[in-house]
Image (cartoon, rainbow, N blue to C red; front, top):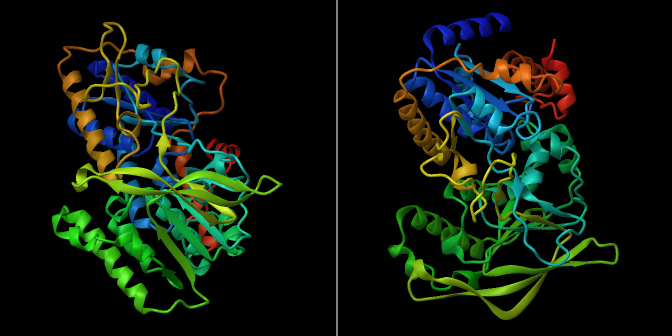
Length: 470
């Protein structure tokens, strides 16, 4: 079946001289771009290359298991991939199996969308101590990302601290505090479920260097956290001094979020803490100065700098460190201060912000012989916003690509992936096509049914390939 599909595309491409487009990265940015390109350029051939054997990137490995509705976009992406002029090639790594210059030689346009896959660091003393965990890796661990499946995390203490107050930080807090029976029906991995079932964590601190008016999490995620079963939220009164007086001057989304925090604060004052409940404790105006460790280099707490906001206008206020500090005792800490991009290929040029240098998605168009190079998603914008933001950016860049390709008079068949495979990656690991992914998908769903879950993800690349390749 796959052979027939490839032959039909190749003949179609040759007879019509249609453009060949390569997208590197099968996450939301890559699929949204492919969706726009195939809709607006019906005569086009799109190849999506992905370093993992499976598609969907952060939709599969970044969305929390208790947010299945967010993953529904996979249905749209699947329809894109099943089009006869779209091909998926998994287990192909940029910079290892293939170079950008080679892709540009054999395609008419190349789009980089492989995202941001490392976490930012704090740069403080003892940051590498035991049980200091990157939130990104914790998310990968409970979502089945192969590189994170063996993450070592000690949940035997009663207190955890999360440094950062974005949506990922709230995801980490929610997974730690959600009753295990509620997680059992999600697609969380078995190894994470088993570890969380034995967890002794009773309270989780969410630490932010600025105040309640500057939090990065959104109202949907906070509302979910506040509604958790057997969990109470404990705010600090002093963090909200003067906040109520500023509500009317806030933009509507920020106003609604602040009102929700104040409502929860007032409820906390009137409801006694139950001994059996777990505790969620957001604290503000604190920044980590140093990690405190014992003689075995294991975390015992965090030395926090007390900050204050200076400036009369809210939008111009700056966070300034004071001479005061305080100690927060904890046995586990998560670093959740953002992601950063990696230079997958030496030919990629990063700007001072660690992003691919580009103008409206265009990276390089100075060559008459090589394909034009573009970037979309976090690799070009930075790890900001939610999936809708990524969709908007991917559509914008894809529109630029479509306009550029429409302005070309004709296309010679550059060979595309068939030529790439023949000349460059003949001796590499097996390539997983869309039919191979469908076999993995079917296997995971079958394994999930045995556990009364939507799916049980395969966490080993070797096993994925064994299932995919017949």
